[in-house]
Length: 213
Image (cartoon, rainbow, N blue to C red; front, side, top):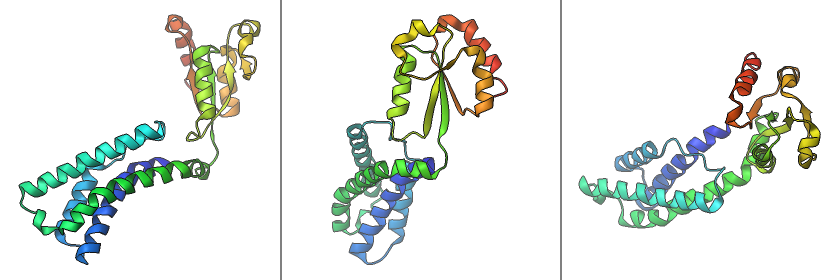
């Protein structure tokens, strides 16, 4: 559901602004308005997921993309001599209502996303193989991301716990030899490998053990 809303949000808001502005000034939905709405929807669907980006970056991209799409629609209208089919005030007002509505809908979606994720059901359980700087950074991002429904269970690491004592505040679940059994027993949904590529044979062994998980 969450992914579907992300895909439909910006295209539907864009269509709604076109229909709403034109209806306000023309008191009807004309064929030209429907065609413009269909064109706007076709060039913006599916909407790009932006919750993992910073708010400033998301707003900047939405605004830039909107002006690009608006310019395309105006150009096509001019090229086909169909701009006169739309009320001039409708066109003028759409240039500020459109981006404002899109940014506002994105902000609302950001605020509602944690609640929507909870509605989707139980969070997905995750484990990380490799208790190192990269693995810890990944763990921090999982725990701090309000738009993720992943729940970190803990780490698997073959080194002696004393060698990774700087990470003692993170849950240690066992060695990689115990990984497959633990994942089957606890129905783990996500397994992240944070291991150096130099341990290729070890990685292949882990993947082989996880084939039926």
